[in-house]
Image: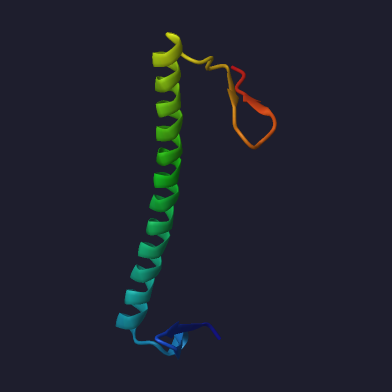
Length: 83
């Protein structure tokens, strides 16, 4: 028996009205989209930090960092992209 708890009250999903079930489907969809967008935002924030660091290095050293190998602090190894 699948249940949903709202404000500490438990409901049997199978006994919900069609309208309530439709709202539940919509709520689940929105939750999954928010999760997807939060992951996307985190990836974009990471990219922003990387671009900022690359810009700083370019401005300070007059050249762009190598793009074939990326060193990520804390991983201990580098990541190589091979074409």
